[in-house]
Length: 263
Image (cartoon, rainbow, N blue to C red; front, side, top):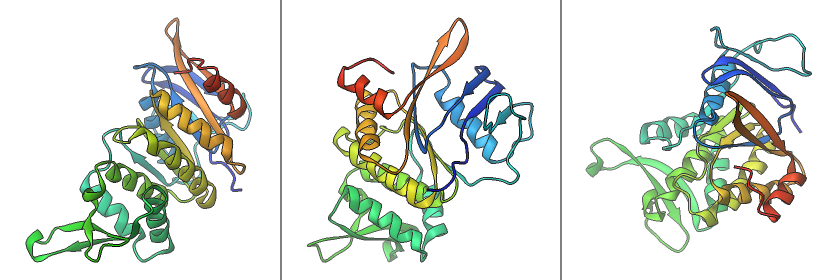
């Protein structure tokens, strides 16, 4: 098990956060809360931390409350999957970074985890594509390769997350509005995949959601995984201040079983 990049987090004077403290973080963290409580802002703050932003915003990796505030000694790998997904150019760039490496197999295995018929993935240009490279997949039982889009729109979102995972090795992966573009039945397997790959590639994951289906899927995956901790972090506004409530795997299991509202 790799060491977590962030064991806890403090954000001061950034957007809606005057002084936000999260005293404990897991390997995979799901951020929930009502609209406009700062879920996406927290992801932005993490991006700034990873890139060693030197602004008035202070984000600290604190091993214990009250310890000295500090930025990382060097820039940390950080990959963001935005709410509307990665565009075609971003997907090509992420694929090119890991093509012909062992991480290429991670991406193909990830697609196969969700769609077992997938046997291979590649980027190719054809005489009719005017030099543009298109994503094609080999599918079991079909001789000719198919465009990835033929497997459904959700495969673009899944591929984006898989590529982001592979590129976030030894770093941080951020996913905004996890459930966007995903059929609810796919989400449990995708969360299982994220737990497995995050452990194997030493990635710390932060995702946002406002979907109950997503929370349930996250809870199932967290409960099944015996290697890493999954943590639900609820942000809520109280008298103009953003506060935090943490749910560990056991507490989240109880909350979902009893249908206790945690969003």
